[in-house]
Every structure is written in C-alpha cells, then in structure tokens.
Image 1 (cartoon, helix red, strand yellow):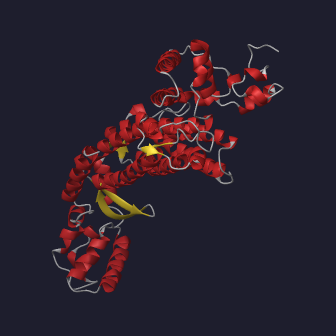
Image 2 (image 1 turned 180 degrees about the vertical axis):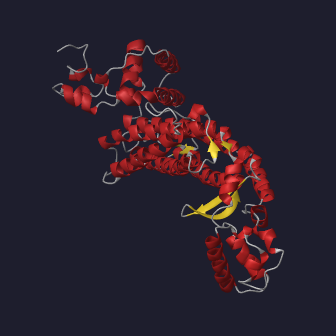
Length: 469
C-alpha cells in the first residue's frame, strides 16, 4: 500500500491509528464532505488561529510553536484564496485537509494544533462563523431592499390603485400604501434574522468531542477572539446543536414566502389583464417562439425558489428529529441545505433590491381599475352611518344601490342623486364627496391607513428605523 495515498493506507488518515484496513473507495467518497465544506475554509482557519493563540496563552503551546502554526495557517489561507490548495477527498473534510497541509508545511508542530479540540466542536464553530457572516450580508441586502421600497412608496403616496380581498376589487388604496405592506413583512423578517443571530453567536469551541477537555483551555478567550458573545454552556449540546441552522432556515423560508407573495403580485401586475406596472427589460426575458412576449422571469424565479428553501427547512428538521446526544455523522447533511438556503435568500434579496426601485407604475391604468368594482361602496355605507342609519341597515341600502348600478352598467359615483335617494332619503349632495376615489383614500387618515399624508408619515418612520440599524 502506498503511504502517499490516504485512500489506500489507513495509517495515513489523521484518525487511522486503530484501523487495520483501508476505507472502501466508495465509502470514502460517500462519507467525504470536502467537496462542499471547503467553502468554510476561511472560517476553519480563523477558528484554528484563535484556538492556537489561546493554547499559547495558557501554556499548552510555546510562543515559537504558535508563531509557526499561525504563519502556516496564513500561508494556507493564501493558497486557498489563490485557488492553489490541493484538496483531497481522501482527507474527508475541510478540517483534515487544512491540518494535513499545515503539517506538511511546518512539520510535526502542525500536529499540535488539534490539542484540546475535536472535529465535532471545530465544525460546529466553523458553521456558526460561516452563518454569522452570511447573516450580516443578508441583513445588509434586506435593508437595501427596504430602503428602495420606502423611497418608491413615498413617491407613489398619491397613486390610487384597487385594494383586493379574494383577488376581487374591495376598496381603493394607494400604491405607496401597498408597498409599505411589503415593507412590514420584511421588517418582521429582519427582526427574526437579528434574533437568530443572537443564538448563532455562541462559541462551541472547547467542547471537544462531547465532554470537554483535560487541557487548561480558556473558552472565553477563544470566544472573544472570534467575536462570539459567549461560550456555549454544555459540551454535549455544543457539538450536537443545530437549532441555529434550523432557525435560520425558518427565517429564510418566511422571507422567501414574503418575496414570493410580492412576486405573485408583480407577475399579475405586469400581465396585460392588469397592466399596472412596467418591469424594465433587464429583469425580463422573451419567448423563443412568440416575439411579443415579455416574461417577468425574476419574480417568477423568486416565487419558484421559495419551495426550494421550504424544502431545506423540512430537511434539517427531519435530520435532527431522531438524533441521540451527542454528535452523529448525520450532521454532515446539515451543510448543503444551510448553504443553499443562505445563498438563495441572498440572491433573491439582491434581485429584489435591484428591481424594486426600477418599477414604473402605470398610474392611469391603476386609477381606472380602482374605479371599477364599486370599491367605494363601504364609503357609502359609512356615509349613511354618519347620517344616523344603523350599519346593518346601511349595508342593505348600499347592497341595493350596487345591484341597481350593475343593472344600469354604472359605478356608484355615476348614479344621479335622485337614483341614490330612492334607497335612502338621508342621502344628500355631499354623498359625491365620499364616492370619489380620492375622497375614499383621504378619509382613511389614521396610523396604518391609506391616506396619502399617512403614507408619507409612515415612510418617514420607516426610513428613520432603517437608518438606526
């Protein structure tokens, strides 16, 4: 057996001392994770540097040994950055590859790096570092998207469009008000993300395999060096906990659900049946056979990717549901769903953050649509109530009025005063003030209402909140 090939020599494995035969070639490929976990190489080196510094500070490593290890790790980081690192499947994972390369570069001193830790706490640390970095990137993109939404909402505070329930015309609202509804969803997503980050930001380093270590380590120091808020409290839980990954995927699933709802509206609004907005060409594609087509591919893809992220959440929940304490090889399956959920969330946010400020509302079409479907019927009922009519009676009167208007092929605002008064003699000339679309939206003048001045005030509050992040 060749000593140069880890696949054919069990002793060449960094854990191979008790094994007498080589790992089966298929099993080696099947159990290896280096093809995907190498993307945590930067975090792995970061964690190793902190661990080595702490070992030197407590006297487990000499200063000379630490200096050699640190220099070696930094040189390996440069190799990886340059794409020159010799990744080997036979070394299983990112941790073994880097440690083997370190020993190759600096000799036996490299073998001392793993003192006082295990791959179990090492990978748990790497994942948390990696996810913390992605959370910060996602938070920045989420904030950028919200900033674009608020700016557009403020510009369109007076733009009237139909508001829907059951996808039927219900009451007139403003486009700005509608956009701020999207922003509220994203606000909750941001809060969930920041709350998740608190639980990600705990250091499991030093928990070792499952029980801690006999070396005089300083876990608070490695936590400090790595920017963690504190060490985790229990070594068994430290190496087996993946709640933070599940929680992140739950955030991502909700975020994508919200983006998917917005995408569905964008797809509807760009259709010729609605024709409410124009989506710039750079966010669309055409048809290979129908030259007139302009397809809203970006919103459609975001809508489609929601199912993918939902699947990752279910995969991680299922992965963890039957695992006994502490670490199990099952947990190798945590990374690809987590990686893809984070990548997908970030990409979808970037697409939306670029696209939303470029939306161009077709105001005349929106206004014309809002005038259909008797969207001011509730305003007429409220008018009657203010005149002393009980609401249920007012509801009946308006229903009769709508039925009459349908028969006349007219909107309520197009009926004459005489025609309206046949249903209630309390109706006067002032009724037409409430039957206009502008009067309807202006009347909702309270916090959370669609009145243009309330939309502008809400934009100001939203912008202030974004600036405070």
